[in-house]
Image 1 (cartoon, helix red, strand yellow):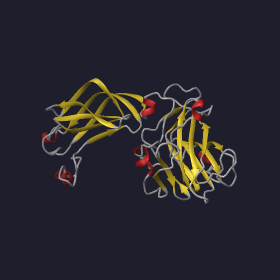
Image 2 (cartoon, rainbow, N blue to C red):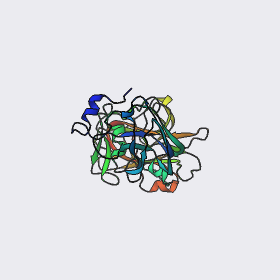
Image 3 (cartoon, rainbow, N blue to C red):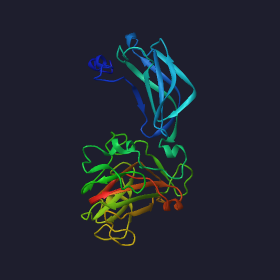
Image 4 (cartoon, helix red, strand yellow):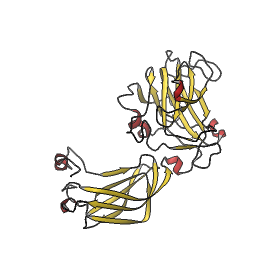
Length: 332
């Protein structure tokens, strides 16, 4: 069967639709790709992918690079890649000429040969001592958190703890990552952080973020990080924000009952910030950080820094997180 509706094929490169790209996304796993095999419909040679360009995604600079050109005139064809390509996203693109694919696509099977290397987050790949979950790169979280189920969530320019952009909840409620299907659940692309007691490069133990109340009506704030919701997670809370007990693996509560206070017990107003940090390691359990969920009683704004491997780094500026609960406006 053809993969694409014929109306879509007819409108490619027309202005109503752009160019066609066939993308394979592993979601959060870096792979070493050593070859590609196409099994196409022998009865429809007009649909065979005879000449395509293989491209790969570089996470650090957020850019697509051209890989090899894949040429064939057979229904079943394999292509060995020398040298192998390392990425979490690959795509097939036209090599030029007219609109592509003119005869639709009728792949019976597309096989990627290689091996999994681990997490695909840029800081994990670079074996950095700190993994930045959010700091200026809006696209890191836009698709996961800016959707119809998070009406109070947004990005705001100005007033950030570092840089120029902060996360903001404009009212009471919860923010959670978009549902990515039964395989991945409510989790964030490229987030797969190994949490260990003695982190090696690319592994982490501590979690840090900065926040402030965005208005006098804010009475609580909480951020959780762990695997996909609603599994049990590490939680950092202040004020009257609370999660269902069965969803909490361990909670670090910042002093301050019934109002949003900093560590010294002073109210945190629109122009004051507090920082929170927590140890994510749990001795009897190996787990991975794949999702963040903020919430609160009122608006708040903040900037989290997750996955710090060295406790001393907690005194420096860190990254931002995205799953929280808030009672009132809050800024991350």
